[in-house]
Amino acid sequence: MADTLRVILLLALAAAALTTGALALAWWMEPGRRLGRALLKSLGVVPEAEALSPGEGRAAGLDFDGAQIAVLWNRGADGLVYGFEEIEGGEVIVDGHVVARIRRGEVRKTLDVMAPDAETVVLRLLFSDARNPEFELSLWNATLAVQTGSPAEAMRLGRRWLSHLDALLKA
Image (cartoon, rainbow, N blue to C red; front, side, top):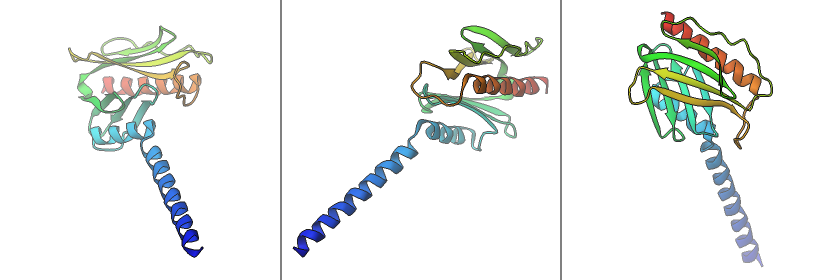
């Protein structure tokens, strides 16, 4: 009887350890965390501004001290790091319409539209790279299963990114 109780307790302990390990692994491999680690690895420092789209597996991060921007796709497995001098501009696109734009050498089109019921909010970054001239990142997409925030928060994040880009292009 004592041996049976000992075996049951060992099995329960093993099951608890396996469950804890599986939960820790799921937490570690969560898409947002993976993208954050990939940004840290690609920039070499914690990004000072970041935009993540866990549902798409895309991310972008700015390192002001290192004067670089990283864009990642394929859940952070692939990406590019650009110097600030390679940035041409950016746009915020809501439901297929450009609502704000900043481009090198052009007047800024400010974000004057707030769409609280938007289906999609996309940040498009433009670079002086012939192979990869643009990078699109969904800040909000009502059709994706993984959602963080709201359309209004996505619009604020897009406006903040355009402000960063505007300051970089003027420097």
